[in-house]
Length: 326
Image (cartoon, rainbow, N blue to C red):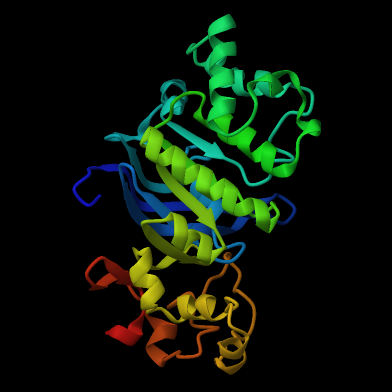
């Protein structure tokens, strides 16, 4: 995998939302949802992006796909900087990148049959029409484990897991090389989650797909991802190979996330020491001056409140942004 070229490179990505107030609705500040993050994904690889709600994961996904234009930075897909591509030309590049949305109950049009929903991207981009599109819909439904004769049914006739399979089929209909999975299992039953993740892994092997897998389920991210990035308040605080981070967490925030995972052994669960974070996540409108995590970190030092730590490689293929390792 390490010998494969990079399919996606994200450099110093920023997304700020203006906050307006007063009688004349002047800009009084900015919500720094994504604040100077960088990462790269090789062809055929899966990068897991983890963090608690509100840390900027979904905003990152939308900005990478240019569903929202970034405030600053670069998003290079197959050698093309998407931030410099016009809206008209960007439409032609949509076939190379797709997204699987979080909620299968709201991501499908209830008035369209699932066959029409899957065929729509192919028709819009001129990939297939008529009988060719109909045949392709049948192939896609079989590919995701559904009967091709379901094409004439409506989303209300399917369970959540089946709807997510339909969403996956729709994302694959234009033959993308890069797919963002935006918490695709968070709204599903636990018994169904493993089936969807195994389906994504199988499709990746068969079609050579590259994934950005967003989730707050650390165990699932470890299972599906080659590499992992941990995000907190718009910043990446730790990044590296999934197994390396699982075995040796370096950042105090990552350690707190790991400590919150329940252990399958009741005796070990009772004996282990938990890391309980104090306070709430600071506002992204006015983040802390130094390290973003300094207001909640159990190992905080004075330098943490004044100087923002850079993301640097501490071990081979393992980066961390923390003054503890200076």
